Image (cartoon, rainbow, N blue to C red; front, side, top):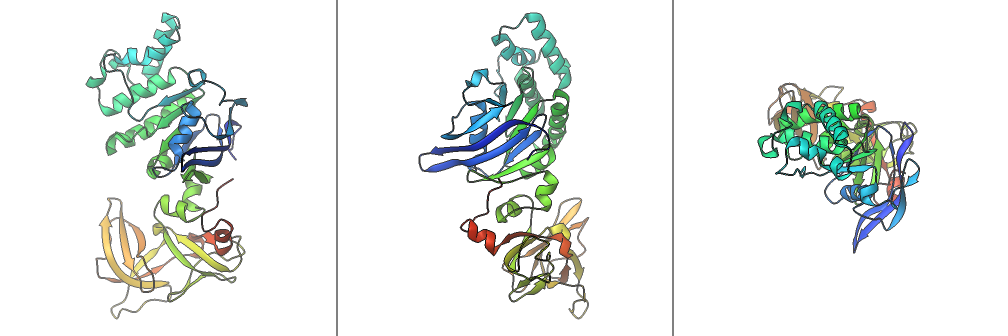
Length: 375
C-alpha cells in the first residue's frame, strides 16, 4: 500500500485486444503528491494502463477512482488528468508562450489570468527568456521543458508522462531527470511516468510498479525493489543479478548440484522451508580475489573460476567469471579499474545476508511456474 492517502485507486482493471491480454486484473494505489513509475518491457501493458487513466482506452472490467470518484465515467477532456506524449507534440507554428497557453485559451480563461499563469510556469521551468522563440529554435531539453510547462500550466491532479526522456541524449537525460524531480516537487502534482528504462525509473520515482504481460509483479521503493526482488523476472529486469538454483537447507545455505553449498538466507528467516529454490546475489555483493600462484583458493572462497571478460564503466568495472558447474558466468562489480584480466584464476565469495531468496518450489507450483503477482 502507498505511504500516503491514495489519490488514484485502480482495482481489477483488465483490457484485452483480441487474443492479446494487455492488462490482467491490475490493482494499484497511487498517493497524492507521489512520483510513481510503471516499469516494464515493451508489450507489458504499461502504456495501455496510462491510456486508461487518460481516457483514451476503456477497460473491459475493473474500476478506477480519483479522490474517491469514478474516473472511468468522466470523458477524457473533462478529467483532471493531463498526458505528456513521448514526442512532446509541440505546435511548430506557435511560440513557446503560445504553446503553453493553448490549453488555457481553449478553456476561455481571461487573458490576464493566462498571461500570469504562463509567466509563472515559464519561470518554474527556467524558460522565461525563451518565451518568444519557436520550437525549432530550441534544444531537445528545452522542448521537453515546454511540453512539461504546457502540461502543468493547467494544474491537473495527475500528470501522465509517456517515456518522457527517451528522445534525449544521455547527458541531457541525466539533467532532465533532476529537472523532473524538482518540477514535480514545486508543482505539487502527482506524476505517473511510464518507462522501460530501469535507471530512469529508479532515479525518478518514489515507488515503482514492475509489470510483465499485463500483470503487476511487484510494487516497491527503488531501494526495496533492488534489494528484495520478488521472482525471477523482477530480479533479472531490475539491475543485474546472479541467480543460483538449488536446494535451500534448513540450517542455511543453498546446495547447488555439482558446485557445493553457497551462502544463502536460512530457510525459516527467508519465510520458506527447505526445498528447491532460487537465490539472487547482486554483482556488487560478490567479492573477488586472485587465486594464489598454485591456483589454490583460500578458506573464505565460495567459488573459483576463470575471468571471461572485463569491462570498465568509469567509476566501476564489470567482471564475468566462468565457474565449473554453472551454466552462466558469475558477474562481479568492483569500484574503479579491475585488477584482473581475462584468463586469470580467481575466487568468489559473499555473505549470506547479501543473498536474497526470490523463489521456492512452493511459490512456483502455486502459479504454474510464473512469478506471483503483487496484490
